[in-house]
Image (cartoon, rainbow, N blue to C red; front, side):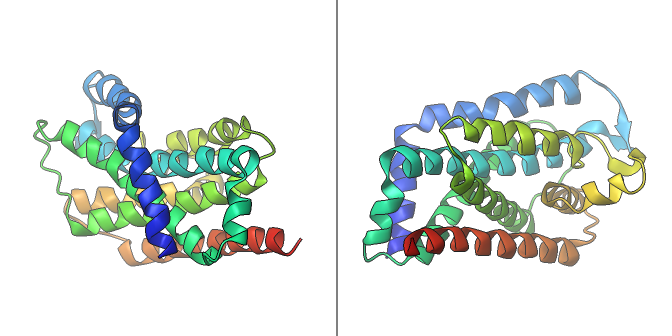
Length: 244
């Protein structure tokens, strides 16, 4: 019941701010699509650059959509509205509250990724997006929702959430196999970047879209490992606060 309550809150927020959320999910990816995809006529790995770019934008949108849906709202609720304190004294199990936040954030990320798919439908690329693609989008969203949840517990003020976006989300957006291949990155650093969750999600969605799925099982296992680690950290934060 607690999960449904949290999801209903997210749904109410989504309906209230539908146009703002939709425009925020559209503007940046659309600019990247026009500037990099249509403005730069080139190829990547023997394919039109758009075929490389679109799956990366889909993965990036699920990341940014999920992260922003949780990080800023949770920071405000915890620091100013004291909603987290109310949850702790309520009969709602804390694990249900956490799971609801993660699922709600991931669904918001999938919505952002779906917008990119709709925007690129008129472009005849031959890319394929199927149920497995959407599963990876959802899994990627849960990872970044959980990361956002952890960072919201670390935030000392309302302004910390945008800083986390600058420190974490923005670098990953450009480094993690989204706009260009990581093959030319120097060794050592390349392997570290390849282990980041967005690199895994971009690679898996791109391989499925191009009809040659590779590394799906290892990639999903790595994303699940991220999800488990950050979920445990989030649970630890909440239960430690409850026992203070």
